[in-house]
Structure formats: structure tokens, C-alpha cells
Image (cartoon, rainbow, N blue to C red; front, top):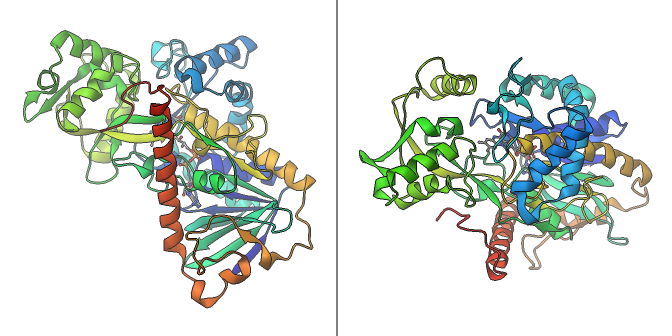
Length: 483
Ligand SMILES: Cc1cc2nc3c(=O)[nH]c(=O)nc-3n(C[C@H](O)[C@H](O)[C@H](O)COP(=O)(O)OP(=O)(O)OC[C@H]3O[C@@H](n4cnc5c(N)ncnc54)[C@H](O)[C@@H]3O)c2cc1C
């Protein structure tokens, strides 16, 4: 078994993981990064659309920051964490500058159009600061910055279990599988940046790597996980490869058909209502049960969950958002105006996850930090464009705070490494490895599959338990799930 020692171990290499690793490294920490996908992966780089709209306050002024916080809290409902919204607003521009310095390619709102209504994010009423994160062009520069920084990187490496000190119970690192071998990373601080849980459900627009392992490992060690019932659902286009997001700005030009018949009519929705639903949906992408736009997804579900979308080209010059998206759709999938686009409702992202302290990103477990979609700003409906912002902002914060924590509490050198205990155990039988020493026994090698199955089952159980609790407590806000 490979054994490594460091100050901070970051799990995941999407926007949050890359940000955490680089911020911790710049703060002077010795950092190991463990990533299931290739370096620069997850929903941040999954290629389901041209890039990610990243949203923050209109400017760094106090007034705009306060307005942004209100903009987040309004659709987020009673589950929102106002402390996280405030940190996101306050740290947004500083984090953006750092992210660009590391190589992120960000395209600001078009010059002279900054207050245009197109820049009103999903579920919002006001224009905000908008930056397009171009995942493709950002990938190599960000990855190269990580590689040059001295962060020790492992891709195709799956975190399996956290480790704890048998005497004090303190978090002491993690165990991962890396290219078929076990690897133990011994450290005082772990940052989970494993993305959301949308790939636990089907169909999904998220990266297949987002299967809730972070939430499962955090819950195993005693950290709180909450509001998992709030997921983001989104209409997507089925393609022969990765499905594509259906851009919301196109809804008002779209006709939905099933076997040549109008989907709204088949669903018993009259023309007026259908037109209003399509217009309302043109201002936000994700499904919500709280607005008239819900009739669009509900009509698709009523006809069996999928249908064709035919987009009529608007007259005159195309608005820039539409032009960018349609150019990408044509180039990536050979699809365009007038084509029959096979659409369905997909699971896209998590609006709940691991609970963290907004000021430090620490979970309730000392030494365990989390950032990005695995520890999101809780929301019933999430303001558009803040998932990527929070991955950037809280990723950086987790790295800075994690490095400071590791400096304050270096792992006691006398801890007998081979006796460190595993927190997540796939089964409770005698064959289950309980500590690093027994893990090395020949008959216990290759337990990876069992661990994967364990985390998958645990993640699914967490989701189910959350949904049931909300329904039992009578607070279910509406038909939030795909049938
Ligand atoms: C189709 C689509 C469109 C979107 N559009 C937008 C948008 O326009 N604006 C916006 O703000 N947000 C958008 N989002 C959401 C946004 O992409 C994500 O919330 C954000 O990228 C999450 O970043 P992250 O770093 O937290 O996680 P991810 O980018 O998902 O990264 C997770 C990382 O964890 C790794 N990992 C997972 N499990 C393990 C494990 N056990 N061991 C080791 N590594 C592991 C993965 O390999 C990956 O590297 C969209 C999402 C989707 C799916």
C-alpha cells in the first residue's frame, strides 16, 4: 500500500477541488489531490453545454452585495443558509481575480450590455455580475497551474474512507484506490470537493463521477448532511453521447411534439396556459414547482417523460446568448433550428449536501472541510449561476482555512500510522478491514468494488431518507421529483 503524508488532502478536481488545492498550496501547505476523474473533471468540465454562467453581485459595492444576498434568499426558501450567501457575495470578486490568475477563462457580460435583461439569472428579478466560465479553454491552464504548483496529484483515484486516530478519534486522512492499488494519505485536514449527487439518479446531466461519495463519507464520520431532497431538474437533449442542456432562452420559440402531436394538448393544457408556461420558462432553466413554467416539465412527464422539441429560428439578428448556444449545439451535436430534438427531464445538480461553517468551510467534524456542490448553499430553487461561483469561492476558502488548521494542528508524529482506523466499512462482518494494518492483509485486497457499492447504497439511502422526512413533516413543496 502506498503511504503519503501531507498537511491537506483535497478530494475532487472540479472547480472546488482545484481551487482548494491551489489556495492551500499558496498558503504554504503540503497538498495531495485525489481525483476519481482526470485532473479537471466533474460537472465543472463535463461538456454538457458551452460552459457555465458564473454569477455574483453586480459590483463589489456594499449595496450590490446586499442585493445579491436577497436575490439568493428569495427563491431559496426556508432552507437557505444566509451566512453562506453573505460569504459568497463578499468574497466573489476577490476569488474571481485569483481564479483568473490561475488560468480560468472567464468572459464578462458583453460591453455596454451589462445591465441588459439577458443577464438576469434564473429565478432572479435583477441583473447581476455575469461571467461565462469557458470550461474547455480553462481546463489545461488550470490543470497546468496545479501541476506546476507542487500539489501531488492522483487521478483515477477514488477516495473510499476517511481515517481516524484510534485513541483521540481525530480525523487523520483517508484511504483511496489508485490504479488498482490502495493508497493511504495521512494528514490532519481533508477537504471534500466531490461534487453533487445527481448521478445517483437517472437520467442525469451531471458527470457520472458525482455519486455522493463525499456526503456518504462525511455522514460516516459524524458530519451533518441536509436538504438532499432539493435537487435541480432540467430539460436536456438526448444525443448519441453526453446529453446536452436545453437552453432556457429558447423555450418561447419552441414547440413540443410527441409522435407529431402537440404535447400540451395531449397533457390537457390549453394553448393560452402553454404559451404562458413557455414564456415563463424562458427566464429560468431548472424546473420549479413554484411557478407557472412547471407546466412544461409536467406536460413532458404526462406524455411518458420524453418528446421532441422543435425550435423556430427567431426573426432578425440572434440575441448573443442564443447564438452562442446554437453554434455550440451545431458544432457539438450537429443539431439546430427546425430539427426534432429528443428531450427529457434530467437530474442536474444537488441543492443540499454537507453542512459547513460558512466562514471556514469546516464541517462539524474537526479537520474535515467541504466545498462546492457537495456542500452547497441550501436552496429550494437555486439562483442561476451560483453553483459555479460557490465552488470557486468556497473551494478557495476551504483551501485557505484547511491549510491554517493543518498548521495549528499538525498530526502528532507518534501516531502509529498502521493502526489508524477506517471510518467507512463496506460490511460489518469479520472480513471487514478496520485499520490500515489489516487492510494490507492479502485476503483483504481488492475490496474496492464493495466500497463503491457501499457508498452508492449509502448515498441512495440518504436521499430517500431526506425525501421521506420532508413528506412526513408535511413540508413537501410540490412534485419535486421525476416520476
Ligand atoms: C449540465 C449542467 C449545467 C450546469 N450549468 C451551470 C451554470 O450555467 N452555472 C452554474 O453556476 N452552475 C452550473 N452547473 C452546476 C455546476 O457545474 C456545478 O455545481 C459545479 O461545477 C460543481 O463543482 P464542484 O467542483 O463542486 O464539483 P465537480 O465539478 O462535479 O467535481 C467533482 C470532482 O470530484 C471527483 N470525485 C467524485 N467522487 C470522488 C471520490 N470518491 N474520490 C475522488 N474524487 C471524487 C470527481 O472526479 C470530480 O473531479 C451545471 C451543472 C450541469 C450538470
